[in-house]
Amino acid sequence: MKFFIDSADIADLKAAVATGLVDGVTTNPSLIAKSGRNFVDTVREICSFVEGPVSAEVTATDLDGMLAEGRALAAIADNIAVKVPLTWPGLRACKTLADEGCMVNVTLCFSANQALLAAKAGATFISPFVGRLDDVGTDGMELIREIRAIYDNYEALETEILAASIRHPLHVKDAAMAGADVATMPPNIFRQLIDHPLTDKGLAAFLADWQKTGQTIPRK
Ligand code: E4P
Image (cartoon, rainbow, N blue to C red; front, side, top):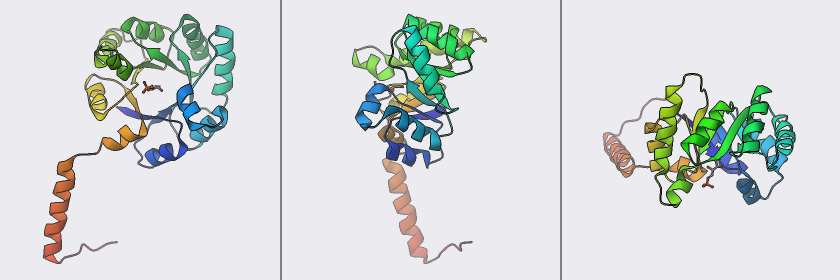
């Protein structure tokens, strides 16, 4: 499973990328607003230290506007994935941009039929929002399972399932078990993936016992 970081905070992204385990980044207009920075400058900077796909979202809602913004965003760097919303103009923009060779991430997916449409439109990624579905009392992870089952029925559909709106580490595990290709998560969730009290306790015990031996391991 690929790990993307869902953030526009440069310091957080650099810290996550330094682990060597980050495969890409997703941003959205809310995350850009939270950063307080210029959108294009921020995305360009992210692309300078992230090798994998970096999603940058259009804000136009009409086809021509989405195409114009999408082409401008794609020109920022080779690893830009243009993010478009799951609307009819968004799907048309997806198809055109994909035909032009752009990576496209279709966002705000809340149903399996929407995911099927995005795949037919040539999306590189489909982003089902697991947490927001949970928020309204439905099982967000069930949508990942449905999309996985549908995509697996048709070899021609190459769209990757990008589990989005991840709210806690359990979402990451469940998305991996459901067969999502990618999970995009906030930096704090990425950091929490490693946490287990028995790891800390076990390491403390090993080190205490090792100290009793009085030995040191030679270093090269
Ligand atoms: C994904 O690309 C979105 O930016 C993100 O996962 C949305 O998450 P939220 O529901 O926590 O805002």
